[in-house]
Image (tube, rainbow, N blue to C red; front, side):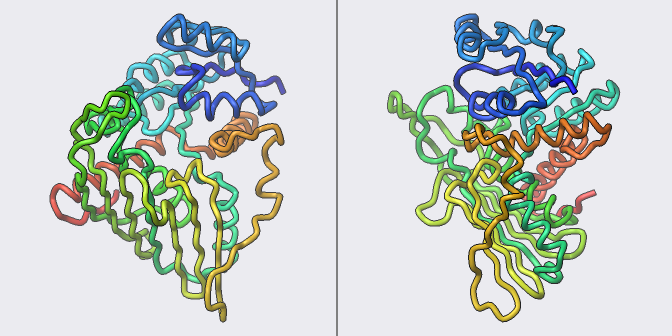
Amino acid sequence: MAPIGVGVIGGGTTGWASLSHIPALTALPEYELRAVSTSRRASADAAAAQYGVRAYDNHHDLIADPGVELVVVSVKVGEHLRLVTDALGSGKSVYSEWPLGNGLAEAEQLAAQAARSGARTVVGLQGRYAPELRLAADLIRDGYLGRVLGTTLVGSGMVWGPEVPTHSQAYWYDRTMGASPLTSALMHALDALHHLLGEPATVASNLVVGRTEARIAEDGSTVPITVADQVSVIGTLTDGAATSIFYRGGTSRGDNFRWEINGTDGDLVLTADWGNMQVADLTLLGGRGTDRTVAPITVPASYRDDLPAELVVPTARNVARLYRHLARDLATDTRTVPDFGHALARHRLVAAIEAASATGTVETIR
């Protein structure tokens, strides 16, 4: 089978695509990176020199490139509506980073356009493909926990702390920009949680703006913080199990990621030094029966040997696993990867969490 030709919008030599999509695509034989685009000629030329592919200074030319079959949109969420809309208009397959849109209305618009076009779509919720998550899923399926009673997850957003390096990153603190601890770090973890344990039935929440301003390190200036940087979500799953999730902005001197799942017969714990679990190196621990504590569970090589050995960039591994599942879907005409319809469901969950906090009520997820 010929490799799938890919073009990456936002495919410069720095930024998220350079740490994830491009290392993943160049390592996987199922794909061929054929083009990138940036917003400036100089950065496009630098990308062309580094990656050895065609490089454009506008997204229109990348979308029109006849060698590009899959268009990847890896830019700030505030630009997704325009760029993803244009990509969908080409009839080509489209991969958008999460969040799909800046708010529910944009996500609804993009999901509806994707459904009308019939295009294959993917959204970048890759945490579910971590080897430790897949092993945990198998253990739960095989009865390690018995019946799941509840789960507690605490994490750090890693950004949204008291300081940010440059003005270009200050948009993180602006609630109108769509990139917050809730929409980003927490939802990546919550998507993995629901993939593993089942969908939500109800949610209640408390979204708190803890810090009021952040310092810009490059010049010492400050910007106001309007995003909720202390996010609490509790609820129930469709099977009645209880859920409790807390994400903080910045980092903790304690645990930056700890996820505990408790059942009638056992317990599983996932930990990491990095709070963004979709890119973190996770550790899986467990105990059951007469065990008094949890202990590390060795992840068999079969869960890790699904990627080429040359893919050594940690932030690219789960992205590469998502790409591998997409390639299988395209080859077998199946639909297993999270698509724009799935993204819309997650945006509706975000809206329910926001509504629950604003009204002080429990929201039912429909």
